[in-house]
Amino acid sequence: MVRLDPQSLPAHVDRLYRAAWALCGSPHDAEDLVQETFARVLSRPRMLRDGSGSSEAVELAYLMRALRNTFLNTRRTASRRPRVTSTLDEIEAADPRAGDQPERAIEAGELYAAIAGLPEDFRLALVAVDIVGLSYAQAGSVLGIPEATVTSRLHRARRRVVARIDEPAREDAREGLSR
Amino acid sequence: MDHVHDQPDPDSAAADQQRIASLLRAVEVPAPRGLHEQVALLVAASAPRRRRRRAAFTLGVAVAAAAVALAAIVLSATPGAPTALRISQVALERASRPAPRGLVAAGTNIAFPPWASRGWPAAGSRSDHIGGRTVTTEVYTAYDNHRAPGPDVTLGYAIVSGGPLAYGAAGRLTTRAGVRYWLARASGANIVAWVQAGHTCVIASRSTPASELLTLALAEHGVSRA
Image 1 (cartoon, helix red, strand yellow):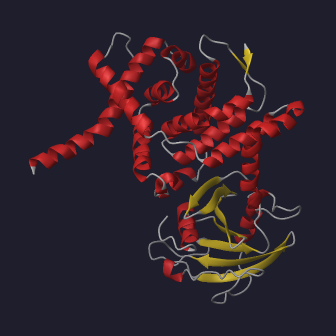
Image 2 (cartoon, chains in turn green, orange):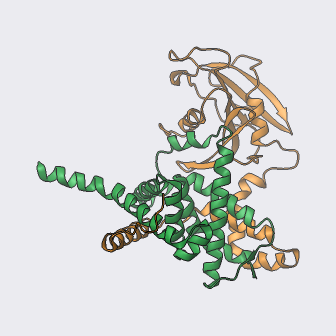
Image 3 (cartoon, chains in turn cyan, orange):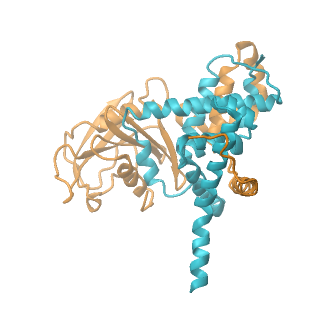
């Protein structure tokens, strides 16, 4: 067992934010989710199981578990009370970073929305492995499922996201050719 | 259902894996600076006492930057000063006097906007003194053919003299046209607050969606659409 060093956590904010965005489908909800996750993690000293990976991998696995739990708890709470969030999502015209890099920001929204549209089990597998960067074994441990199930869910998740992102482009290309 | 024997075709699985990795690399957006600052503050606050002094040094610029960023909101919250949340309660009160056209909020140079063309004619105003600040509120009542006008379809727009106030509660922050808006829901009301010309402005309504309140707030800065 090793003690979680709070000073090491800021290094993971970017990755956690992207993971949260893919889970929630909204950059604003993602900010709230990451902030809430860190607040919970930092509320008291934490001991980590010293797994086989590097200290960074162990921390990421721990944070992914915390993010998932916070996400599920937050969603349960949210379903019991009216929220401003959904309304705000509807009025969010553009990503605030669009001014810096418009194309990338728009694509980010599309991709994370496609991931957020996956069934929850598939989404969590994809977020844990492809966004947070956990191994299949770590993801299985974090999500409480066998490694083989991670593989299966991950495959289906990737297939659906790729289809959703790439199919419209192929349709456009076909229409272009037919003209 | 997950079936372990449901193994994907290796070629297509590898292609999908590569495609996803490529897509994710292409959109590898960083977290907003405000989130980094919030996490830095959480980390600093979590440090044991004997380490706090050292942590303050090691966090150095990050914490200082966060403190500066928050200064406009937090440090101006002098003891006894109300919060934006408290002002929202005032904004929800009934009008006590007429609202002259072009009414300027006391202690500021900010005139209340004529929102009749947006479906919100002025219905009255009020003035309150809270924590050494003067709060001028204009009450607007909806005039909309698509819904029955009535006393419940109102919103209050309060402008506070003196410097910016603390928000007073957790909420959602969103930036539009360079202006930071705080959005929250409390006591059955939607609230939007921002700082304009150095003064805290608050719009609150129990009957109007936050999106509509934000649209009105944005109109104050020449942003036509939320």
